[in-house]
Amino acid sequence: GAGVSQSPSNKVTEKGKDVELRCDPISGHTALYWYRQSLGQGLEFLIYFQGNSAPDKSGLPSDRFSAERTGGSVSTLTIQRTQQEDSAVYLCASRGTGTSGFQTQYFGPGTRLLVL
Amino acid sequence: RKEVEQDPGPFNVPEGATVAFNCTYSNSASQSFFWYRQDCRKEPKLLMSVYSSGNEDGRFTAQLNRASQYISLLIRDSKLSDSATYLCVVNTGGFKTIFGAGTRLFVKA
Image 1 (cartoon, rainbow over the protein chains, first blue to last red):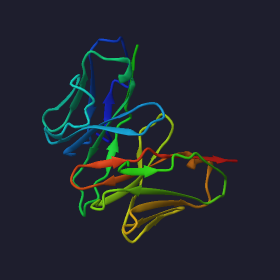
Image 2: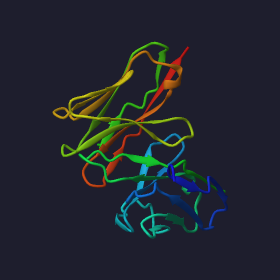
Image 3: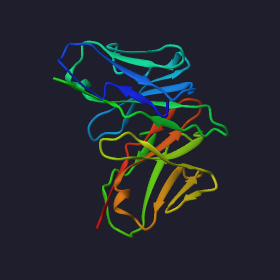
Image 4: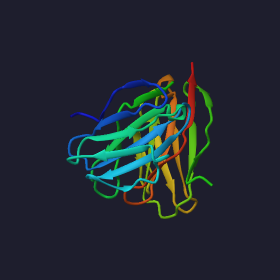
């Protein structure tokens, strides 16, 4: 596709429910990132994928958060037993293997999650 | 100390003004640097990469000072459309990329 896409664009859920967020990276991009951005705040790194493996999961806030990537393409971020503090915009970015070390991340439009 | 620090602002400037933002980073092994722009309720978008020799793109100039571990962004002849949050981004090697919290810019008519 032309860019990174994410779905749903908005999600309202009740506290305690599970949610699944999807990211479709730019075709051919091997690296995929998930970030979280709370209102008026900076980007909080959650997890990074290189291909289907996640070398660094240290940013996941708790064991309620998990992510997977299959076929080196689509990724899903799952939040179990959602809490109100999970409300934020969840951004996905993908990155190609650039030359000379400059590897730009391209972001999707994000999923706005509201936990009531 | 945060790995990447920016003055949050906001910077309020009139149209036509020149404005500069600085960003400091703590990891001396950092390898590549970027400025992203984020409009309200939108995703971040790459504004420009920052090269060791400095680089210019129209009204925007980016500089890197490795000795003092900071990067800067200069905007000349500010436009109303430049109003946004500017994010400093540092790649510390491999996959690890750190985003600053951003500097907010408001350009007024």
